[in-house]
Length: 339
Image (cartoon, rainbow, N blue to C red; front, side, top):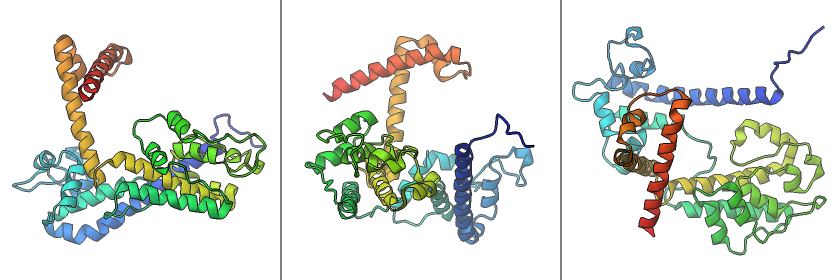
């Protein structure tokens, strides 16, 4: 007789762990292929480069190579020089993207390694010759065409430019974005059949939507809600089994959502790395302003906030209050300065 343990994991938990294992396995395979392709050139330039990378997380006494550096150990270029020249890998990627000069093969490998390891989950392609707005518009046009051809639904908004601008507006709450996108759309009644423009707009805004509401079909009433904020890879097979041919609507909507998020992140920049560098610089400016504020208003707490390591939540609470007040003051100053 078998007795189920009360601590046994649910199917959803096992599925989540299985998806995570597959994601890590695919990432490892990508990096292994990249290393295999670059190994001859890397070994010719620096025979110990890959070994130093592989042992970078080990203590010095556990390493097989007698070097205190993890990447570069040349007489005229080491890890200190590398990090001084490239504070983040995005700085390296930006230089390689904009420069036409030849670079050290190790730098090229590190940039590609970062791309392959942190590739994200965007499943669409953006041409370097087209701007991000046109990419979002193209994905949205394809989505509207799909809805028209497969469901006979005219989903083209009256003011498409405004609709797309709302989709890619940064720092807007999902509920606020959904309210703006669904403005003027009638929420279908409970028993109304057919795909719903109202719930499509909520889905594109990033809200969780019941499949039975989205498609106006009670066959999906027992299915889980979906949100485009999550990576569909984890439960794509399960969605295919539930939705069958309707899965094309979800994947097309995901393309639109991802294009909007990418447009939101990259802003006016041509490359993602440039947008990340802009965020890095703004963070430095904000940190400098915060430090100046603390020095001016509570210098006695400066070391406890920025120097001394604290692990206790109780100790961190008053410090957090000071930082929140400082952030509010700095935000007000920036708002009035821009007005």
